[in-house]
Image (cartoon, rainbow, N blue to C red; front, side, top):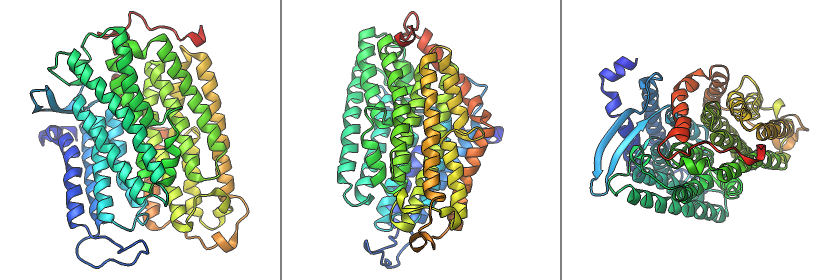
Length: 524
C-alpha cells in the first residue's frame, strides 16, 4: 500500500490537504448548509439546501481518510520527518509553511481525525440550531488540532494553536448550556494568557537565533544559556500546561466540559498540550526541562494530578464532571511519563495520549447520549439502567473499564509503560502514582453502580430508549479501538519507538543539553 501511495505522490500533498481542506469545507458548510431548526424550540427550518450536519460529517470523513492514507505512508524503520512539505511563506521573517510527521505526531493525527467524525455522528441531535455556523467552527477546530500536530515552523504552530482555541471558545459560549458565559470566559482567559507568554518566547527565541528562521530544527540548535532556557521553557510550559489542565492550572476544565456541547467537550479532552510539551518545550530547552528543581516540581505536580483527579472524580455526582476529573488524573500519568525522560515512559506517554483521546471521547459521547434523552447527567437521577438499555450498559461498562486501565483494554498498556519507565529512576513517585489506578477503579465502579445497577426509577427511566443504529455504529468503532489497542498496541509502539528514543537522546546529548541529567532530589 505504501508503494502505491508513494507512486501517487500522496506524501507531497496529504499534510497540506489535511490543513486546508477543513478550512475550505468550513466555508462551504457555512454558505451552503441548511439549519435543521428555526429556533430553540426545535421547529423545522424551511428547505433550501443540504443539512449542514451532513456536509460537516462528509468533510470530516474525508479528513479521516486522508489520515488513514498518511498512516499507510509512514515507515517505522525510517528516522526523522516523513511526508514533509516545505513551502516559502514569510521570507523576511524566515517563516515557512513546513509540515511533517514522525512517530510522536502520527498517532495523534490519526486519533484526532477519526474521533472528530465519530464525535459529530455520536452527538447528531445534540445541536439543533445554527448548525451551519456550528459545523463551520467544528471544521476550523479540526484544522487547528491537526495543525498543532504537524507544523514544524513555530509561527505556523502558533497560528494553528490559536485556530484551535478560538472556535472552542465560540462552541462552548454559543451552544453550551444556559449560563455558560462564565465557563467559556474562564477558558479563553486561562488559555490566552499562556498563549501570549508562548508568543513572547517564540519572538525572543527567533531573535536569539539571528532572526533568520522559525523552524523547529533550526531553533533547536540555537545556543542558549541555562538561565535563558529556564525562562523560555516556563513560557512554553505555561501555555501547554494550562491547555492540558495540569494541576494547579486545571480549574477551567470541569466547568468548560460540563457546559460544552458534546462535540466541544470531546475536543477539549484531547491532550494537545501534553503533545506540545513533548514536541516543543522539552526538545527546545532540554537543560531547563531536566533541571533538578524544574523537573522535580513537574514530576511532583504530575503525581498530585494523578491522585487529585482520581479523588475528585470519586466525589462527583455529575457524570460529565467525573469524566473531566478522570481526564485530569490521566494527564498526570502522561506528564509523569514525559518528564521521567526514559524511552519506555515517553512511549507510554504517547500511547496514553492516544488512549485518553479514545476513552474520554467515548465517555463524553455516552454522557451526551444520556443528556439528550433525559436532560441531565446527574448520576443520582439514574439507576438500574442495565435492565432497560442493555446496549448502552455494555458499551459504558467497556469504556469505563478502559478508563480505569483494566488489562486487555487500551488504558492499561500506556500506564504500565509509564510506571515501568518511571520506576527505573524514580521508584518513590512511581509507587505513589500507582495508587491512582486503585482510586480510578473506585470511581469507575461507583459510576457503573449508580447508573446501571442501582434501583430503577421506572416512572422516569423505565422507557428510556437504547442506543440507536447510528449510536451503536459509533460505539462499536470505539469498542474496537479500545480492544485493538489493548491487545495489539504494537502498531503505535513501533511507530513511536524511534522518535521517543531520539527525544530522550536529544535531552541528554543535544546542543543545549546539560552535561548530565540531574537526579530528582525526592529520591536521593
